[in-house]
Length: 130
Image 1: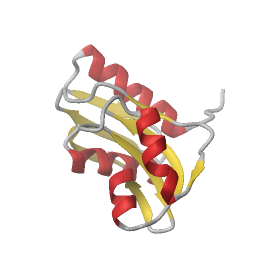
Image 2: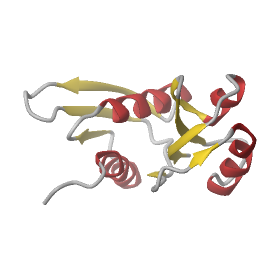
Image 3: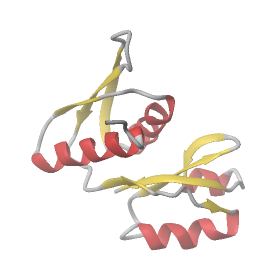
Image 4: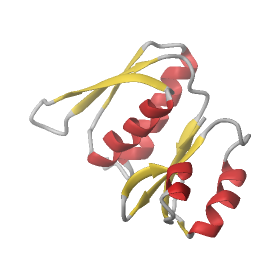
């Protein structure tokens, strides 16, 4: 059976492993979007580090969890939001203003909603984590 969204599969696997109390999780297949999403999560401190494993197929990622991740998911369809709607959308998705991130893809790259506001740009919503 074909995968509809590799990002959704990876985030669901990550959330399930974190909920179960695992320290490591193996994500496959690998994509550039998943790597950039994990980079944002690592910058915010929700995961420790990740390593790419090239198996000459789809690729794999080994992620070190730190137990801080409560929930992560993908927003489908990828809504197009402007700069003025970023704050409204983040309050709709996230449980609190103090923690959590909405990850967006913009013309300047993949970033969280706070960085998008600082760089004064809008884009499409990929997912969230808290």
